[in-house]
Length: 416
Image (cartoon, rainbow, N blue to C red; front, side):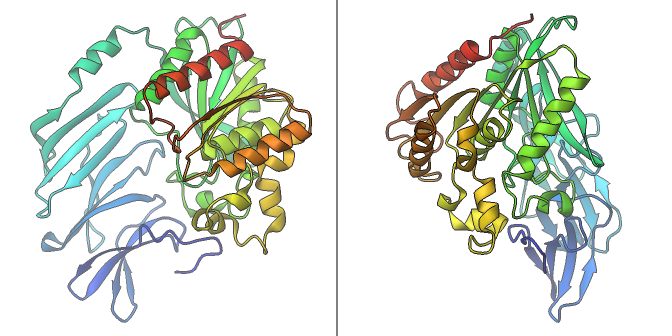
């Protein structure tokens, strides 16, 4: 394969079938399955304008393959089976179960452990007969969690698209305050990632992070997340590779355009109370939002960010940005620290001092830059915590409490 940006080798080779092997490639614009002979001849197995999200199993005995895809909706995940001759494509996941399905398939392809969830429903894990999707045994139904959730004031959750211009639509979801009064104004709080290693707008149960967003909605925040171009969403190779050599640049532009459009589309949102938060790449995106668009975002929480792209690991940064010597301007303009002098809003920085993924060095440099430019901010450094900041008694509760208190102070909740 050849690509002007990068090649996703994590998909690639899957299994041998007689004297050929199966191979997943984006060579024709979408992530599709091929059969490759020893002399290099290829036969396309899947086709159409959709991506294989994950290859699960090649069943050579029955001449078929199983994979996860979602041709009609990039926010969902379903199991498909197709013959290795390219015929008989069939969705096996129940169509009425809208959301995200995952599977672990047995070696003989007769059984699978299946887990289903969506943004409304906690996961259910069960053993199924693969060919018929018939449930044999339920391993975990999260009954206690479901009962607890029903006792809470549940906000409405919705998926939608935002037209950001130039023919580009982005996926988004919103968690709306209960008893929303559309004649009043509510603060908008954006959860962001935005880099080429993840997707936030997926219709699945989101665990503790999602429950925090629920709580914020109960307080009177509109919580929203948007997937800009360049995320891992199954929307084609051009979508994912658009971020090449401009990590942090295109994404923050798309995010800002989406926020502006949402403020126009939903007059009950308060343009004077717009906040943003993210972790890791999302922490970097939060900084880019506050520094590059200081008149749009008024408060932000940045956790474990990469303020200077030249300090992050090469296997990630050079894959998406090219070599520093060949893209010096890209590295400079994609790094939030370059624009730290523009900070106007309220900023909370959080980092674990033992972070072996995003080293604390970058945070220290950012602090020096903000201080040099006379910018006030708040900061929490968690001693000996890693990138996840969860080690030590009480850490998670302390972290989420600090985030909530900061938000309540600088982006007051509730309608006005």
